[in-house]
Length: 102
Image (cartoon, rainbow, N blue to C red; front, side, top):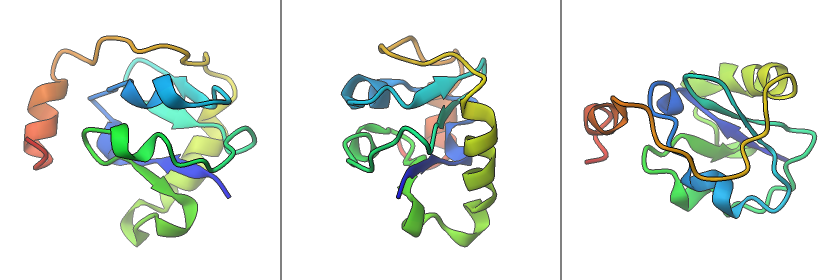
């Protein structure tokens, strides 16, 4: 099993989740994070730390978000590993509010 970062991360890139990952499976680009399914050990430590509820266990990914399973697998490996908390994107708080997680 693995975890998946879904569309809620886009435009936010909160990185609290990477601080608890024991295997450094998070990768990121300028807009969001991805989880490398080959590295994720399914510990679940990242899920409660995401302020926009973007991370799901593979079996719990909502039907409307299932495309992100393949996107994470494809995009994670070539991107840099995220090892430490970084500043969220400038509009992240507004995005969090728009998503209903204020």
